[in-house]
Image 1 (cartoon, rainbow, N blue to C red):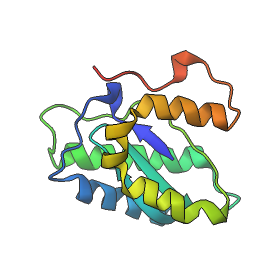
Image 2: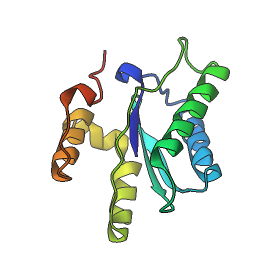
Image 3: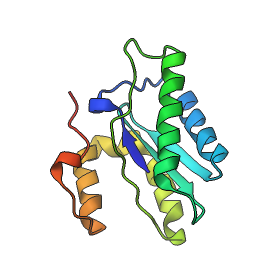
Image 4: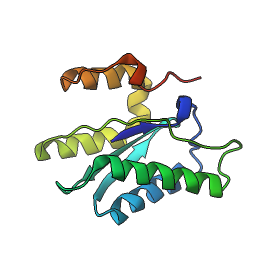
Length: 142
């Protein structure tokens, strides 16, 4: 699962991002999914999770985004009101790919120095054969 800060503003500070990712992982686990890794950059987050077949991804992400933004705002971690951007991306992978995906998510900061997030996101959509409307793609950073 991948989701971004509203307007892709680089608001996730390295000083508290580990705490935020821990909060997100705990929310996922509380919703009866299994957190494998949560990591990201200053403007977006990747979550590798194990889901039960009956779980609604939309409900899981609704809870993750609402509760984690509340955490950020309640803790006053940013100078401005924090919000996640509308929407998200969710991709499924075969169990044999989990180790590679885990390593990819673990290396987000390094990875996105080589390839910008939006370039990679569009490549993922294309490689998964997902038709998309450009108006629903994550917005460029402001």
